[in-house]
Amino acid sequence: MARSVASDFYHVFKYHVIINTKGITGASTIQGGFATAVIPEKTMEAVEYKEGIYLYRRKFPGDVTYSDLTLTRGVAKGGTNFYAWIDAQLKGNAYRVDLELRHFHRDEVIDATNFATTAPKRVIKCFDCFPIRVKPGSDFDAQSSEISLEEIDIAIERFELVDTGTFEAT
Image (cartoon, rainbow, N blue to C red):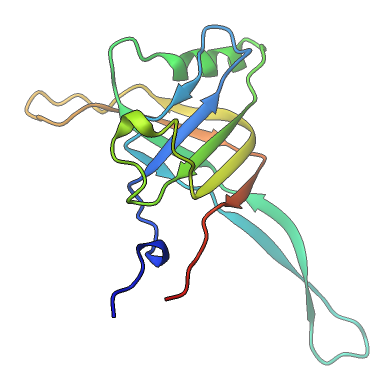
């Protein structure tokens, strides 16, 4: 029996990143065009507590921490948005932004032109983000034929996962 495409797992190659940098001097909204996006993790610490009447320690949920987000893209002519963003932070201007990582089902986005009109199946909304590391390009090597990649590490305060996809049992 054939299975439904709607119940197939999401592939990792259909995603779109939107960083809303409005209000930051010298930067414009940065979107798409990322080779990799290392998704942040949400971790909750386990706190142990022992009372006198128990023979064992009891565990309770503790503080929540969020790991950083790392984005990588090819270096392009005139692509200085990352630097304008981190410079705004260094100069004491507005620098915190919200960003979205939009995850699409493999059959719904044909090419890069219809990302804006297609609804994502999952969205990771990251809040109060700011850059903590920018690498302007790959290390130089005259014998290499690779594309130069720039990286940015972004600290996030928190994120929410919005799942808009539906699962159909077959």
